[in-house]
Length: 596
Image (cartoon, rainbow, N blue to C red; front, side):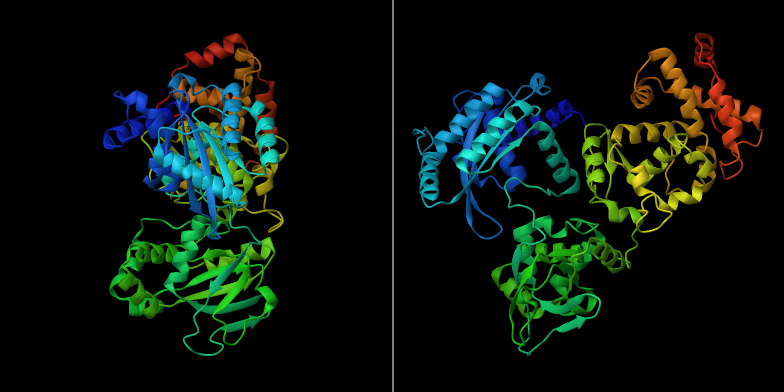
């Protein structure tokens, strides 16, 4: 999704907000366009704050394209935090530009005046009242956070100014550009999550201390303790505890989990039905929750303890249970909540471990009832996150976590990490000596580290230099040959026989691109050709197979590339891509099926 396409989506939603909130006193302009700076901040509150109740505090800025708001919320530790936010509305033609340095410095001046209590009276009485509360909050050394967001690209030149502001006033300043807002919108709209919400507290860190109420049922030492390889405890907890944990930390509870809870699923709906209609059976039907911690404070649990303190807390199994309990409890009346807490208990298995390797193994086997793949344990890797975020600038979104997208906009194609990795691996086999060592059986080790298995080569494929452009080019070239290709297809073994031509196709492609376009990027050429001139890719595929079949009529009929190396490498590398040969390839008629 290009930024201009996201702008169109946002613009339509802002128009709808103006039409739906025409009664709002802040919408004082006659035309829709002039009201968009105001509703942009409403939209921001709706996306990140899940509410419009703070919209009364919005006031227009000095010009007709900026607005300000001041409001307060409780952070994860129940401490009041004040937010001062300024938004900057831009026309579509300015989306590709960077945040204007002069305008940003003016915003910092506004923030400084607010922080020092020198801002004048505005026309918005609600804003003025909230500003006075902010001044009192600052006087009492309360926490304040500043947020600036604009519908254009980030500007590296303003970062020193931002850092100086943070240092001078000892308060955080967060800058959100259109790329960050687009990413968060995609996560919320199409995944139903926002992992890094600027209006919430920081990520639940590995060493943040939390209090966890446990249920004894009036029985002394009503828990199990296991002290073998890793210290572990089994406790009972009430729905209220689950509700308060998720209300406070949201999806940050599952950062170490390979899956986030799905808002809509059959499993989720069944659990909700049990909670509402057969709550007495819930404990018997439910497998409970498994969580990891660095340790229980003081390394002990008293016989009559009703509350324990933990050093870090992450749920690694039971995300669906947490979400179902939270949703039912959130919508319940006070009387219904009371009954839920009297009738229902949940089993919490709490394991103390500080090692990533141990945590990965525990996560893997506690989820074994719901089959996981090796790639599932890579979803939180930095490289996987980076590839996905880069994919959001295209119409091909990288799915690092299976089933994470509940919906996609029209025209967007999902590419699973497994499909992308397989296509990329075939396409890059020709480099080095990889082709001589390859067999399709190796693909099962694609997402395994060599540290886990000596055959693993995850780091070899997903190195720090890999880009989404490279993955996408390899995937699109594969789709040229097989429009319905997927690793999950039942006839995949048969397809893999033909995919072995891809490393040889790359040799001809590089010769063709270098001869006609000089230093043009190969991957960029493949992506553009797929969109504008897919026939040339099909013709290069056909030409490559013709050369290989001339050397060996049984090409592609066996499942190994080892015997192909010397035979085909010499022939392909000897080919000189002259203008005549390029024209011959371009003018060739395509067979009905390129590879079969």
